[in-house]
Length: 518
Image (cartoon, rainbow, N blue to C red):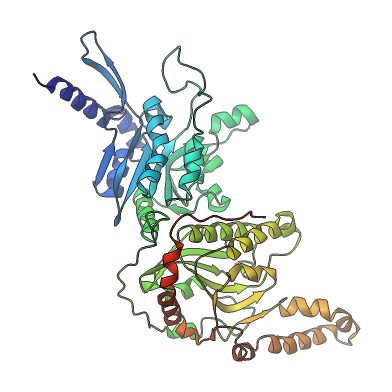
């Protein structure tokens, strides 16, 4: 007597699950230029994947109990190796019901966040699906309608997981409804340029509700999300998406209960780059390339930027200094001189809270002229979002090193200096309540208007006050900075600071709690 017959039933169901939606459905999927979910997982993990629920689905048997037909769960779930670490990986199978969950698929989908929380592992979502369906998930005519009142809210674990483990999601095809909300509820959101679209509801629903006929691309394609703030990284293809997910996770701990890993570093921490002495022009009105500056000071010139096309006045990136992972938060003076817009404030607040959550020290490269001004800025609520960014910085528990590269003016300047920040300044640094131009216009308006040559008098005052305000030596001599440095010393100084703060890092392990944001 053995269990051979049951073992054969397991094998047959597992084999059927591997068929996904069938050969024709897979071929049709490939013709659209997209991989199946199983192919994506192989690409991401190199085949190192332990699937959970390999025979999950819906089987039909005859009167003798023999399997007649089997519909796999259209959600694949398990743990796999992503780069140098393991992660929980889940994704919709678009070849079955267009990714809209069947009963078994929904259960696995809901369990993915619980699994990441239980094992304290990062969560990677490979998204492609349309969310719920009016047809329901059970497939039974007399199935109960709605969820039980005792049912735990589905979004509870989705919210909890964001405070516990890194969550990285990629939109790799059409993504709408619940999968789209999952993309938004991530620390990193990636989409492929040509094949992905992300929207709350698809074209048919939009047309029926609003009478507007739009394609998926027009509703939620790359051109929309390049500036919407919903998507952090846009890539060319699925291979690039997998590389982005792996690189992002490489900077982070598996959960908030650990510290970010230190990598082997072949880049000299004492390296000094000569270009830094001339990268900031002497003319205060002339821009420079902040990303080039960052590349000169981080390990091997490499950094991972988040949200490049949204809130472009602020640069948010992950990088390493002497192998230590850190967040880099900088101003891009080529966009509104680096002023904080409403979008930049939202981007900064989110990034600072992210660094605080996963215990990443922050290196702030400061060239902040203040909040964006004017009617458009006021209509966008810039002050509220800027105040929220400042609140996030004030509550940040991680070590900060703030390097004043050029400007730091006004209230917005506070968004670059956490409590107890280690402050360095370049010779090009200048600070004050207002930039010289605006300050002169306010303080000396009557004198300028009464002058024989108002334009000449304004320029004289700007030159005079500009020289006074830009005297970094007086501030350095007064210990207003921890140190006034030669720009070429920036990398050695940051690496030295990071070594010094390592004992502080040990006390940061565990979940972080924030106060109310404006």
